[in-house]
Figure 1: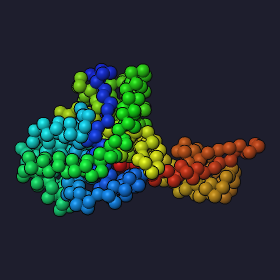
Figure 2: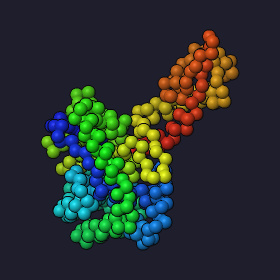
Figure 3: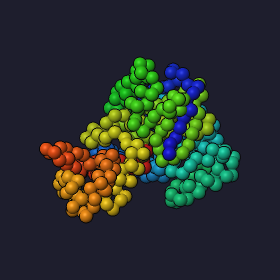
Figure 4: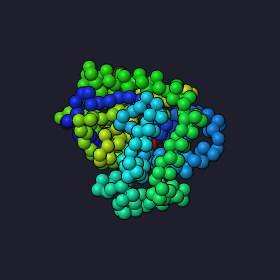
Length: 368
């Protein structure tokens, strides 16, 4: 499963790399309302929570349809501005129909497929019903917010802008001042890699979950959804993020320039543990398959207690040596088992760290 972007019409100058204060603020408010997704940032969340007025948190929760389980597309700008005010001005320039569609039928991190055939919920009854249905499934606050947006878009838009400006004053301006040098440096590095080594090398530096197909005409983002979009000559925008890890967001709505927000290497704020590199869904599936067999679980149970040879394991579990070897090969391919040589014997060792990492990697792939 993946989100793919047709880039056959995009020239090198059509790839843009820049930090976005609005996109990083979107990541920040998502982090604050859903901290369980971001254990590496717990220190930052606790610090902000201790310093911000509770009323501001209540307002963030009231509007969390825009940033809890999905990110409103207009919060990931294709044309990043120098300041948050510049980017909010660009959002204000959107029509009501476009703003409401971007807010309520998001493509960037949706938990259900995007309905491409639908129009704006302001004019399309089916889109309106879908937006309300999604909100009803989330709770009374969410349906209240969606109805507020649908009933009075200008007032709702002004409310959201004021909320984001209040977040900037309360905590984000300080965080942005600390983060922007790092984000700018990462964006500059990506631009240089593209110029010197090409698109394939570039996407390899963005994330292991982003690749280019064999023809070099399609960017493929490893996500647990199936969607596709096409970039025209305007190109694709890449937004680096520290606060967004582990999410890898892709705006792929019709009529919008594709945007990829990616976690910078070692994404963590001060005091947080830097997370490891992303693991592809294919690798996670392989590792889960390696453990879905009772024989392999028995072998793992023995190996986690100490190194063993094939003969040791065959005798312990009343198996043939070829059968043990076959199962050990699967565990080794999945990264759970390593080998070493002791004289003429090959000894198998279970990698406890790799097994412990599986749970984290699976959660991050689901969140990506």
